[in-house]
Image (cartoon, rainbow, N blue to C red; front, top):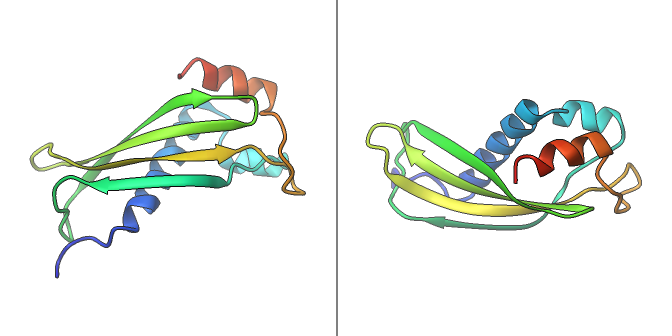
Length: 117
């Protein structure tokens, strides 16, 4: 068929979110070492134009909502060669501890994320 499998978008969203957190700090790696995890609790995605195998894409990641224990990200996937908005979607994350119990975002992370909303 030559069209990118729809679930691949979720991988790209994750990559965009990982880069976002690396830029804002602390990174996922640091958070997990501290026993803080951000599992996806909700996801949505939509294609706008077809993405073909070997298309280069850029993922724009924005934090749109931040609560004490949740964060919502929105994503826009663009084809590099023509700049077309190819797909978009969002994810909601809960902040949990190593026992998978909801916990507040660490203060430093919450402050940095709040500056990005």
